[in-house]
Amino acid sequence: MKLVILDRDGVINEDSPNYIRSVAEWQPIPGSLEAIARLTQAGIRVFIATNQSAVGRGLIDFDGLFAINDRMRRAVAEVGGRIDGIAYAPDLPGEGSPMRKPEPGMLLDILRRAQAAPEDVPMVGDSLRDLEAARNAGVQANLVRTGNGRDTEAGLDAAFGPVAIHDDLAAFVDAWLARQG
Image (cartoon, rainbow, N blue to C red; front, side, top):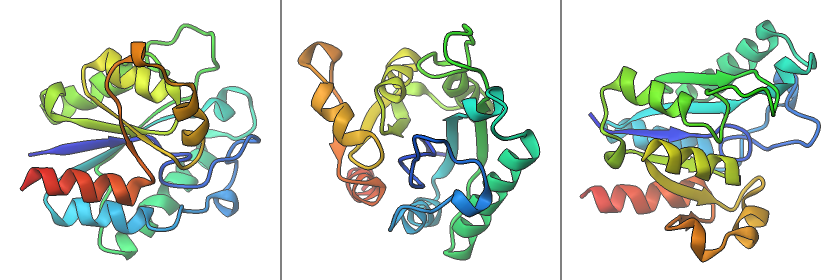
């Protein structure tokens, strides 16, 4: 079975420099929930890999994080989609966690659990650390221009290597499903 790995903040929902700290602050990006539903309806498993340093900073507790994730799953289900798994790294930057992006730990764990070959899996993110995690895990790096994506795109150089760039998650899904035949 095929799968796609998505970052959360800036890809599925609006991002905030102050972190998403409550269910009320979680707002989906227009078209993102329907895009996930289209993947589900095409038989593709959807996993989320998200850094959540707001937990490590004490801005939100695990119950709050789980409530946001539950809201996201319910919102996706309401439009006919499914999120098969959510991996998160609550660690602070600089703590040396192998799970926190740009390290590949979350992605490698998802690949292992799903028994998927990395070269067959796209990862969609909006930041350089998402792209680096994808490269470090051997999966296909995809950038969306939502969230921090436009700034990330402006800072990319040819030395980074190939990155597919899409306006948003819906545009990624359009392009990826078209290639799947």
